[in-house]
Amino acid sequence: MGILAALLLAVPAFGDPSISSKQAEAQRVMGELQQLDSSLERAVEQYNYATVKLERIRRAQKQNGYELGVAQRNLKRSQQVIAQRLVTLYTSDQNSTLEVILGAKSLDDILSRVDAASRVSSLDTRVLGEVRTFKTAVKKHQRELASAKKAQDRLVAERAAQRNAIESRLAERRRFLASVKSEIVQLQAQQRARELQMARAAEARRVSHQQEAQQQAENTVVGVTAETEGVTVAPPPTHGGVVGVAMSYLGTPYVWGGGGPGGFDCSGLVAYAYSQVGVSLPHSSYAQYSSGVPVSRDQLQPGDLVFFDGLGHVGIYIGGDQFVHAPHSGDVVKVSSLGESWYAATYVGARRIL
Image (tube, rainbow, N blue to C red; front, side, top):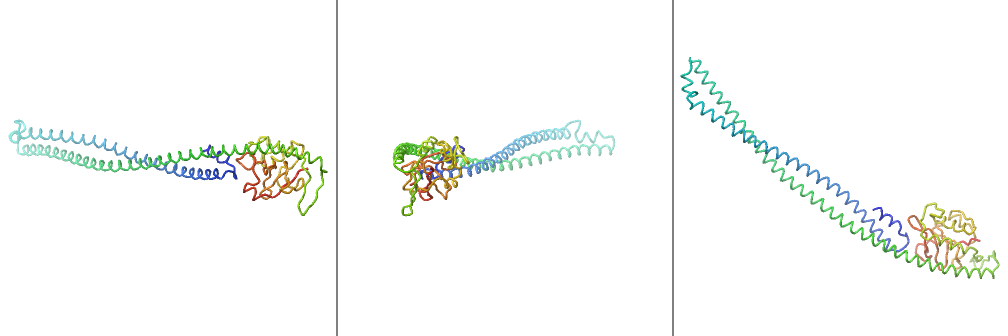
């Protein structure tokens, strides 16, 4: 996302409308991706929790199976022991009921021996009953666990499907975002090519205008101003060379409060360029508007300062209805046209620095 954010910031605020449209589209997609990422995280954790519960059920089934096996073996063993005791007690020569009676020494002895045999049989019967009860309980638990596992299997499958659906949606939106980023890069490259072409044409016009200005200066008295029908006629320009200085910094990034040469804000570029030709200007577009003399738009010459947005923005006129400036955060020093909608709508005026 960081790369896309940088690309979007690099898009001129008042440039190619198709870039602005793609920027808005990319912002919408990034918003969708953030929501999908959040949904995916929840879905993954729900799937994980369902899987943990399923694993617990599987372990319980395994333990229950072990206990059922123990119960079955104990039941079988108990049945065998009881059967053997019954056979021994009632059919063997040594322990038959008759032998118990005949072997007794007295009536009390007879009763005692029969009662002991009966209690042994009763105890075995109780043990057998308990084993059977345990086995029944284990089987019931086994059925309950089987039902719970079936339900949990279904829930795990649902959670997995939900997770996969969100992952698929994420992948699709990421592919779409990548395509939008690619289009933004292409559109920016096209715009940079147009700006470079404009800059080259502007430089050619600057040289031509500078030559014309020098010729005009030879035939005009410097410093004379006149008012004709309310229109100010400014003295001829004497600092056309400042355009070449500013143009040499095309592509330099915009920096808040930047005074160059590594970065500029709008008034910083103007002040720095003029300082290179020996003129000191304040680092403020509002203060710069008080410098020099006013000049009408139809009399603009290379080097004149052009102001916009209630004096909140300034650039250096280069001829051909174009100017060089540092537009805004995320952009670079570039050439723009006075005819562009925002600049035309917010144009305040111009000053010629003497």
